[in-house]
Image 1 (cartoon, one colour):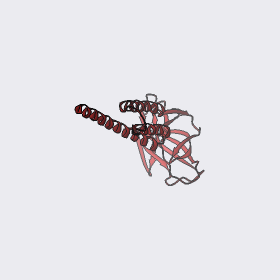
Image 2 (cartoon, helix red, strand yellow; image 1 turned 135 degrees about the horizontal axis):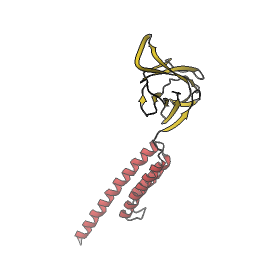
Image 3 (cartoon, one colour; image 1 turned 45 degrees about the vertical axis):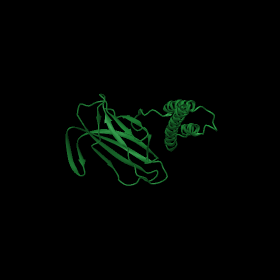
Image 4 (cartoon, helix red, strand yellow; image 1 turned 120 degrees about the horizontal axis):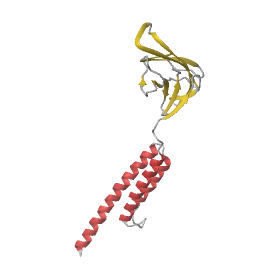
Length: 218
């Protein structure tokens, strides 16, 4: 008889440990969601963690049943969270030359316009003449700070062709220093590419995962 009591107490202790581990895991997910700004899922994880940690004398559930509810609830919340998380695939938006679009830097909106692009065989870089076996593409554009305070500015750019080949910036000509509100500044983005490339598109990106594509006309 005493042996049966000992086995039962061991089983109860084992289930209690499993409930504690499950509660800790759920509580960690609760903190991760709350600190990431996912308040709804964070609160749901919190409710589930409280359910797991409530003493049996308050919540009259069999410990195995409580553990099962906690595990099933945990995976259901993970599934719901997966549906809420936005897709990380980039979004491509097409623009024309001289068409304004918005990019974001340091949580401030900037207006950008790509005016035109030219082909050159010789360019000046820091006062020195530079030649190429291919061709230089000079993308001319302007940027305006739409915010209310001076701020630094930056963005990522590149070229792509009709064969989906990518080309990186060779030289970027833009005034250094903070951009003042509502003040337009010009820039020149210079690329070096083979002479036979066609279907060029200027690609502009920021931290929003949106790729702005501007057809350059050659």
